[in-house]
Image 1 (spheres, rainbow, N blue to C red):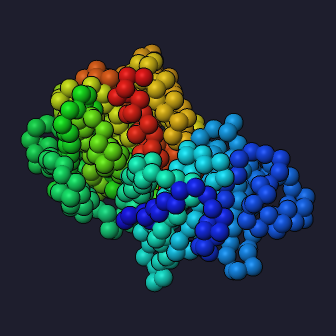
Image 2 (cartoon, rainbow, N blue to C red):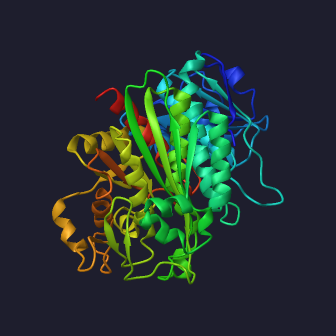
Length: 483
């Protein structure tokens, strides 16, 4: 799936701007409308009818229908607002037009603010593409975005690239579970690796069993375990000065296992592979932007099903690094598959490890679906992660990571408990558990509570947000420059 193509038209010209039936006009903050603004008298009349101030356009964009049958949306950009607020406003404005499924869309700015028009183009590309649906009439995809206020293509190449990465993450996550099984997912990853020039290595169930990856195999054994695997992708550009490992949870459907989820909480569990999809979208974007970093991506792909062979409470399994784990709750499978995946990733001694996972319900209880939570092994990494959230418009909240939480995971029969039945601070306990498998490497853990947000979030208008791709790029760019 690809976003619309961008067509650049230089400085804003009202007559050319309105040649297309659907257009978005972005105004700087001010007390009066520009004299040469298209349909200026209509805008003034509409604002008067609604008893609205001009500044209200900085909170709620509006659209009016033009005499020629076109539709013109308008928003006012307040430079004092955060990136998240700006992307949210732009998303609302763009959707006033995209709801009519146009073939093409024009975007214009009066003061030629490059950051604003890039954000608007990004939002249009993100939401003009269709996610997978299985309807007789699936709808129409936006084919072209005309940008007025831009003269150089390289100003916008990163915009299209980032939109593609986000779309890849959302497209994979949206696929129904009967289509995206561990086996079909692995085939899709092979195709992606081949077309992208990444090397690929697959640790299938037999190999993992042989090398002693008991934590991963405990989860995989409950379903078609021969389909499960830890997939390793590598991209190593010339001149790469730093190395990073990206780890993603790829549970294609999570029933909860023997601790079966009720229907209310099992609905949507095909999205439990979102962490791995974010890693794929991020890897694709890193490679396309030619960031000078060597990337190893590790995807833990399996099902968590209920069957006679599924792992049970009170089992004791040995992880790949030799740690024995007492199973407390079979629905805490994410930390099990990530444990062995992190161990494999750490063996290459990357300078930084980041894992992405829809891991805990307690993170969702703590933050809702508008932020994601992070844990960091150093204060510097934590600050950089939060700053990247502000800059990207994908907000993250830093949680405590203190060692004195760990006694809750003490076990009488094994080295560590998988979790507790009390559930208190489970998102923190999960991070402390995973840290046992990082070999003390610098590490960030991202618990993706914002992977799905009803009604959209920030730039994304769909419930699936693709959260993590934009954040990851902003974070890596800062990390690579040592900021």
